[in-house]
Image (cartoon, rainbow, N blue to C red; front, side, top):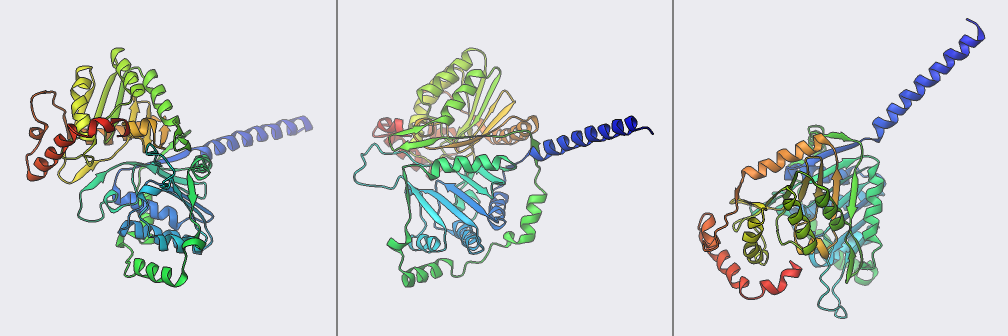
Length: 441
């Protein structure tokens, strides 16, 4: 073999190596996506994220309860801090039920906690902005976004009526972007960091912390083996890219609503079909006009929301029932979820069967113009098809909303003492305060 042949052979080897490297990089750059429909599995994976954190853990949620599921999560967070994980927590001040002594104890462990929009007498009465986004990020590598709060009823722990919800779990390079989005919250001027020096009395706090965790048995389904098994059995999808959309709260009077702008843009560019799951339906002007115009140009707009029996909001129902008929007359297809033991809490949009949005955004006035929300956009046929399967499963448990002006909503489902009581309260609110609160629902 002459020298020129050797050079040609070496050149070919370099080309092949480069191609293989590019394929390898492309494979590694894929995002792994799992849809979390099952509430217990969602809890298990959330615990797995915390338990496997090595360097950092960033968590934002609207609500921490004072119950078993919150205790398990907080216990795992404290153990993560004890092994050296740097932890930042954001929670909305109005829905923070972590005992202050426990918060102080956590801060003493190096955990940083900020509360969003803490009540102050100096703020005006129109200060209603809340931090409604939910995201948990581990080591900039994996994260969960969705609608579940850290409360028993979102994970079907206990005998109460529970929330039917959906989340998305993602592993990949977009974890870096997820941390950046988290920091849009963390560095907001509406945050107040808990300073343990101001509230921490070691003796008193340790006693209360001991009582809080006393007798706390780790749920049997949270063993390391169970967590490994639940992750391995999940159906995952490799997707090319993920987009994270989060609102940026500048002050209690102004939140930069990137989520609403994104959703309106997607509505305006949809050509065939828009499918929506939302617990509440009270449309702000911009979203309403976009959906109205979509219907006029021939786009199917179908919404699944709660019925009288399954809604958890007494204030939303009277406004929704009053406006439901007009929306149906304009071509909105509205279906109402039916269940004896569940509330619908899922927030998902599917556009032209090409893209899904899933996160914390409700189809209501608060999400559209006031609260801080987060959504994940995925444009992948396999993820869309899996989302459609879950959507259609909810649809089979729903009935088409009636459009009969003179028929009482009480008669739309099973009449029980509970529905009679609920209907009575809803009708009372309809003729009293509900119409005046529409902009804040």
